Length: 259
Image (tube, rainbow, N blue to C red; front, top):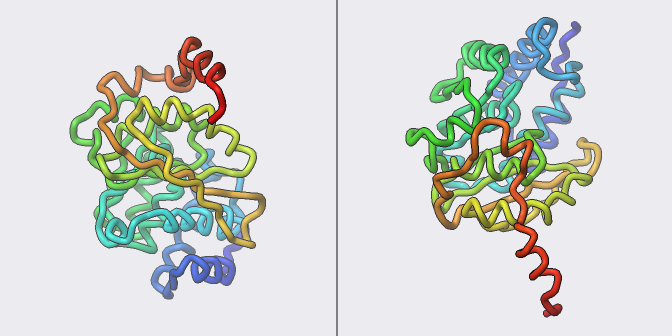
């Protein structure tokens, strides 16, 4: 595959985010793309592999999470990327902000192996790859409620995503879920799960990036109380049986007079 070096759309998009990427960072992004393209021939990491598309669809899109990450976290906080896959959004964020302590959760062994190799190729330090299911890892006291910010991109519908991620967020921290316009209808369905897991919806922040197609937003959930020990439920249950308000509670809400 021919590799390109023009990173203009990424540089311009980063400037819109208040970031300036220097040549060392751009070189890392070029190496990232090369490694991704090489591994994708034998491991199904992404359907998007051409430089121009990766530049925006993956790299720039990943960096948009900085709009919802508090400045102190960017200077050295603990960040967890759940369902990292090919490293998005965690690794691009780490390239731009090497001070963060980053953990990448990936259940698929081959993808976890790619991430481990990628980190060596890019020379990134203070990053760990956790080859485990979120349902199991979230009950490990070394990871439960230990992270300032938890990120999720293309992981699951919001009711499921909330159960898989909020148990990792420390009190006062936040979950940032990247969603596209047609997925924002999930917000109402996720309200019960957010409340049950100790969260509070803070904002839905639109993404203003002309280089990215379609409406995009960051769903930001703050952690205001501990997640009950029973969550997340055993492997597969959050996806197959998403948390929903009991019928009696739903009926009471529907019967209540409008404020």
